Image (cartoon, rainbow, N blue to C red; front, top):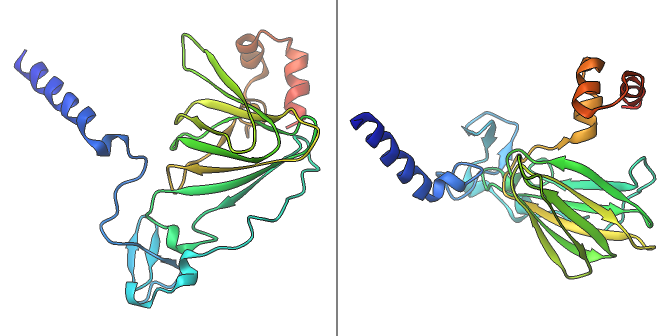
Length: 220
């Protein structure tokens, strides 16, 4: 009983700690400009850090997110990331940004999840139907139509989507609460895994004919 009480006390303290809700660990220095040269540098979270006094403004700068991207693809959308590969000063700061372009009339950022980050989406142009699905057993759909200037939040780990319901191009920007949020596109993961998931398993899980499952797998 005493051990259980100690566990409960530790659990409650952990929930009360602000670090519990952080996707990435807090940095131990002002910043870490990521570099590939190990000489005379410190290794932090998978990358070497430039000596702080040698850092310059361009390490924290990027230009190009104003450029519209080609959306001529299966889903009619293109996600342009801004991460540490494009801005080395982002390393250890626990943030990530994307621009998303949607083709007119049904451009889709398909259902997906970020296992390590919440996402806040800002609509710059167009009209988007967005939403996310809550976890089992409710599986509730929370959705809304967004217009320019609107903002919507997708909680960490939950399946979400954006769909252009307008007849013009749409553009949105999103910030994510991790340097490496990860992304799992649901259809790709389920029907396009490598090697493929046994078709009998998917047929039973989705209540589909086995031939239909094999057909879906051939498309990913």
